[in-house]
Length: 112
Image (cartoon, rainbow, N blue to C red):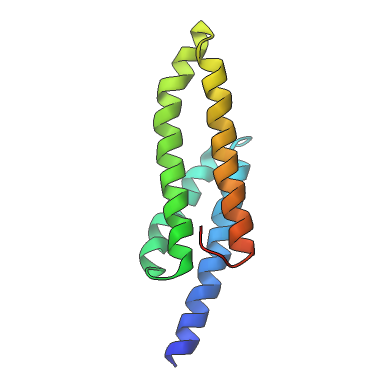
C-alpha cells in the first residue's frame, strides 16, 4: 500500500508543480495574481513532497518568487531614472529562465 501512496504523491507532485510553473508564466499578463497562487501551492506541497524530486521544484518556485519580488522592489523605482531598465530586463529574463527550466525538468520527471 505504501508504494501506491508514493506513486499517488509523485503524480500529484508532478501535476501540481507543472500547474505552479504555468501559473508563474501566466502571471506576467495577469499582474502576478496567479503567481501568488503558485507560491501558495508551492508552500503547501513542499511539505507533502519532502524527500522526492518534486520538493526541489516547489523550493525553486518559492525562491524564484521571493528573489524576484525583492529584486523588483529595488529595480522598478530605478526605472524612473532609466538606470533600472537593463536590470529589469535581466530580472525578467532570469525569472522566465528559472520558470521554463523548471517546467521542462518537471515534464521530464527530473528534479530541478
